[in-house]
Image (cartoon, rainbow, N blue to C red):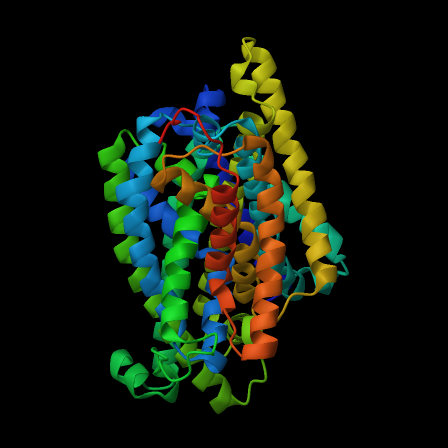
Length: 484
C-alpha cells in the first residue's frame, strides 16, 4: 500500500470514531465522562475490554515473541484466569458495595489520605508509562509506513496520535469508549483472522491446529529450568498477579466494569471476557508461528515487533491483508490508549484534586476538561521520552518489566487491606511504597548474580511482599478497624 492510501484509511477510520463520539457525547456531563451514568450493557463492556487488554503491543509483540520464546506466553495467559477469578469474586463486590468512581478511594477509607494519594499516584505513573510504551510502538509503525515518506518528524506523529484520541474522548469520556472499544475490538479480531487465513493459504496449510502442534515453535510449557525466567510456575503466577494488579487494581480497566448496571452484570462481563481473552491469545501465538515460518521461507529479515507489520504490509499477502492489518493495529492501539487517557483524567480529577467534592457544577466541568488536555500533553512528552529510552525489540516485555515495579506496591496495599484487620501508620505508607521497588530491584539483582536465579516478571510478587511486610512492621496499635 502507498502511504497516501494508508493516510486516507486512517482518516476514514477516525471519522467513524468521531461520529460515535458525537452521538454518545450528547448531553454528557462529568457523571457521563467518569461512569457512563452506570448504563453500559455488560456484553459491550466485556467485548471492548478484550481490545483494551490486548492493545497494539499484544497485536504486534506477541506474534513477534514466538521466534525466541515459542508459545510460552500462554503460561502467563493461563495465570490470567486465576487472577480474573479473584477480580470477579473479591474485588468487584468490594467496589460495587462502596459505590466507587475511583477504585483508590478504597485505600482512603481503609487506611487514610496518605495511602489513598499514594495508590492513585502509582496508578498515574504506571498507566502513563504503560500507555506511552504502547503508543510509542504504534507511532513508530505509522512513522515507518506513512510519515517518513513525507519527511514528517516523529515528534509530529506523536502529537497527532494523542490529538486524535483527545478529539473523540474529551466530551463523552468512558461512555464513548465503551462503544468505540467494541468497534475497535471487532476490527482487531477480524485483522488477526484475515492474517491467519492469508498466510495459511499462501503456505498451503490445510489444518492450522495440526500445523501449529507439529511446529518446533509450539512448545508451551517450560518445566526444565526453575532458574529461568520462562519456567512455568514463574510465568503462571506472574500472569495471576499481573492480572490482579494491571486489571483489578487499575482504574483504567475497572472504570469500564464500574459502568455496568450492577454487580451481577460486571461479574458476567469478567467471566466471558476471560474465556474469550484466552482463545484470542492462542490465535495471536498461532499467528506468530505462521509469521515466523513464513519469514524464514521468504527470506524476510524482520524480527520482533517489526515482523508482523513488515509481512502484512509488503504486499505479498494481498491488499486485503494490508488493509485489515492497519485497521487492526490502529484499533488495538487506540482501544487501549483512549481508555488510558480517560482513566488518567478520572484518577487525577477524583483522587488528586477531588473535584467531585466541589459544589459548583461548572467548575467541575472546566477542571475535568483542563486535566484531560494536561494528560494529553503529558502522554506526548512521555512518548518522546520513550523514543530516547529506546525500548527492546519486544515492547510487551518492557511493559511487564515496568509493571512489576510500579503495580507491586498497589498489590501489597490491597492485599494488606483485604486480608488483615489491622490499621497502619498512614503517613509512613508513601515511604514504604517508594522503598519497596528499590528493595525488589536489589533482591532480584543479588539473586541473579549469586544464585543464578532470575525472578523475571515475578518481581511484582516480591515487590508486593516488601510492601506488605513494611505495612506489617508499621502497624498502628489501638486503632479501630477500617472499612474492608
